[in-house]
Image (cartoon, rainbow, N blue to C red):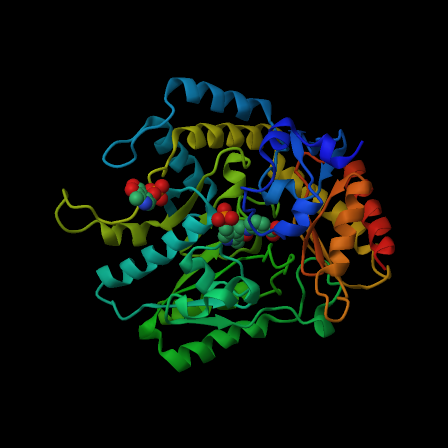
Length: 447
Ligand code: PXG
Ligand code: PLP
């Protein structure tokens, strides 16, 4: 069947024109359109009837697999009971109990939850909390943020500014939030290529924070923000001891440490949060994605008790933090999150992710030696295979892998020339094996 004829009815009528697609080569896509029309468990279905294994759990978010019946039912019931509730000066029971459940999953001491609707909003919110916190304490000169090269913190002005991906920054260069500096990224293939799990080289890169503090002075620095494991950049795993060092340096200088756990939160690393997996407690954790299994947008910031309490001064009738979104704590998201957390618990799914980690690790590292493979990295139930770029055509090789993947019934994710995989926690060892063997086929085909 010709692809044009196979398109969904809606699209046949309206065409593809009006939709400006996010982070997509729009013209390429529209001349090679592909439609996902249905999903169940670890699989998508395309409009032409193909069943694709979802190698990245949606965009790292559908960790229970798609259309989990308990989550879908909870959303349906909530939509009929109360679709929306104003979030300012009123509340609804499910969001209070959800905040408590999330705080209970977080490291001890992180006990307050501010809700938003995406990872980008979570990051911008955490940065604003950091600024306001220092100001309320009388250290209003602490306004600088330190991000990291190759970090991804979403696309808001704050997240873009502390982020470290050139392509996401280039067009907006002078519009950045001022006063941001960046730590070096932690990848050095000559020292750590093909490390299994955490590389043993690179803890010293955290000392760069001392250099940056020496340059700007601690009295001007509000917070450091890093992903415990960088997902978007292609599974950059923290060197052993690196996060501990960042924590020590932040403590020494009164700088807040924010872990952006939009990807690593809710089980991806085989623990509640990356903080617990790596044994380092930040001052704030941002989350999104997996909290509702991707079913309804939701994000948030988990905050240390002491930071929250600092705001709770002044008259009891005064608003303490002038920030919030129309959809903060949305009832459908709250219902979905409760159901997702129930499912994680019932299925022991964070532990399952942890027990699948060695399976994925062993299989993915067997791709070493395939044509053009220059690095393989893994953390929790995620891994990345980095291919050598064709000179002057970054991404071309990975796109070939992606295109061939669809023929192999696999939906891969690529960024630059790195293929990332992060299957749903419900995936079986067999499915993980098939995914890696298909990746092998695709890498050979792209050589
Ligand atoms: N922080 C981190 C660490 C993220 O990974 C965001 C913030 C932004 O979240 P929102 O919900 O605003 O998109 C993210 C999002 C990929 C991919 O393919 C990763 C993300 C989003 C889309 C694709 O790696 N991460
Ligand atoms: N723009 C306008 C004109 C608005 O009235 C509002 C919210 O009331 C916003 C933006 C912010 O929208 P949200 O609260 O969904 O982020």
